[in-house]
Each structure stands twice: as C-alpha cells, then as structure tokens.
Length: 354
Ligand SMILES: [Zn+2]
Image 1 (cartoon, rainbow, N blue to C red):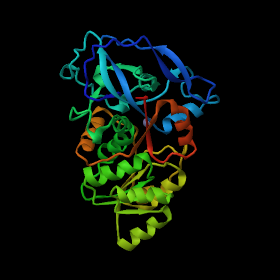
Image 2 (image 1 turned 90 degrees about the vertical axis):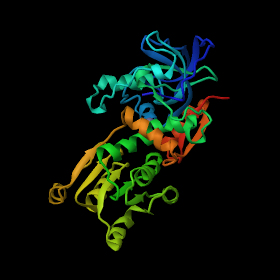
Image 3 (image 1 turned 60 degrees about the vertical axis):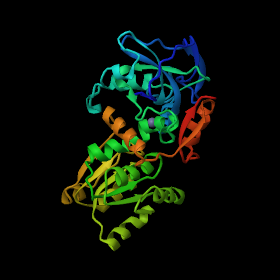
Image 4 (image 1 turned 30 degrees about the vertical axis):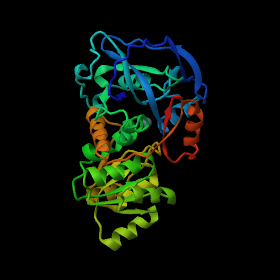
C-alpha cells in the first residue's frame, strides 16, 4: 500500500532511469543500481517518492540472505512510502477525486503472492528528483488536509505511519477491540510501542496504559508520550498488585518467550493477549494458564486501507505524534544495519537529497 501527499499534477516529464537500492540474493548490503523508471499501467499511478520509512522488516530481508532469503530474486527495497502523484494510466484521471475507491480487502484474505506483490511495488529508491514507484491507484491513501507544509504530516512522518502507526492502530482498535476505560499493557516501547501508547491513550481512550521495556531511555519516552506507568518488565506485577489493576489487554510488540509468559501471567481472567512482535519464531503458552484464565489469544499483522486512513486522521488531529528522524537515502545500508544492531532508537525515514 503506497501513500501519498496530496496528489499534484506535474507537467514535467519523468526521467527514463533512476537509481534504486536493491536486494540481490547473496548480498547483505543494498546494491545501488540504475533501473528504468516504471511506466504506470492503465489503473496505476506513478509516484515520486519523498520519504521511505525503514523498519526491522528491511533488516530481515537483507540479513536473511544467503541462507534463507524470503524472496530469492532481485528487487528494490522499501515498503513504507510517501510521495506525490506525477503521472497516471489512462483509466485514472489526474485528479484525486477521480482516483477509484479502494478495494477494502481484508489482509487475512490476501493470498501469499499478493503480499509479495506489495513487497515488490513498495520501493525505496535514491537520486534527487528521480525516485519513482508505480502503484495501483486504488491502493493510494490521500494525506488529510491537503497541505504539504503541515508539520504534523511531513513526508517522513507519513511514510513511517504506513507501518509504525497503522500496525498498532489495527491491532488495538480492530483486533483487540480495545474499549474506552480499559487497561492495556504495552510490551516494547520502540517505534511501534511509542505510537501504540498514544493510540491507546489519546485516540481510543483507554483508562490506564502501562508501558514496559528493558531500556530506561525507552521508558522515559513512553512516559513523555502519555503512558500512565512506564516501568521495567520485572516491576509490572508488583505495580498491578499494589494499585489493584486488572489488565484487559496486553499488546506484545516483542514476541519472545519471556514477554509472552509475562503477558499470560498479568492478564485478568478473560483478557486478551495480542501478539504483534515476531522476536521468536515460536513461543509456548501454558495450557493450564490459558484454560483456567480463559484467555483470548489473537495475532495482528500490518493493516488495511481504512487503518491507514484513520491513522493519518489521528496524526492530523494531533492525537498521535510519531517521532521520526529523517536521514538521507544514500545512508540506506548504514541505517538498516544500524537498526539490526540496535544502534538506532528513533524511527527513521530516508529522504532524497534536496
Ligand atoms: Zn515496515
């Protein structure tokens, strides 16, 4: 799913080639290559990319090679894009009002090959004024407000929102169905967690939001963005007992055995464990605890069109303020490997040189 700043017609013709950072099987560094600018099909638009978000998915794609590549072919990296429409196919009028309505398909019904297509068409490219991606017009999400100068919706923030806001938005609102006044514990205060806190507290009106992370600096940020309590994992149980708090939902953004164990332990009877983190390939859950407490266990991945629309609306309204650091597109490899090594705290969006 691509996302756009307000579409703007451009009379300037697009260049024929551009530079792209690509995954090549067997390589763990993004390969800088010159590739043709894509030509939009009848129902597609050509988007000039203004920012491309980076997340751990990029790390997994690069570092899975050579022993276990997810996609064993060469393709352009990147999957979180913000840009401007600069050209369109003949079925798409160059007017945002005439962009066909989105097909609101539920991600759960998508076939695996469709997900791969998404991974392919979401691109991360480099070269000033020459980075383009084509996408089906029906997958484009206009940015609210139609104001490219809006400080709340910079290209970097919009790009990062396609994952770091949309994913926790869907998880908390649609999958966990978090209700106003409920208590939610968020395990992991990284890029998604800091947004999840704001979504729960300021957009979905949770009663109490408890954030937990092993890093003190992450806890300080969690507190800054609205968590009622921001504490280390080994202190959560004592807090719940001390304050007599019942936990309705645990959002596990880490997904390793210790976080799942603590979630099962801290949930009230009938509570919901919402798994989003993919830290471990597999986890085990105590069948005794699960049945005796009658827990509900759900998983969530990414989001669909309306989740991104609503995420952007929440950002436009000032309810969610994603923290995004902008870095130059040429730093692609450095940023991805820095993220893998835990050296990058903030959410990063890559932007072309001005
Ligand atoms: Zn991502």
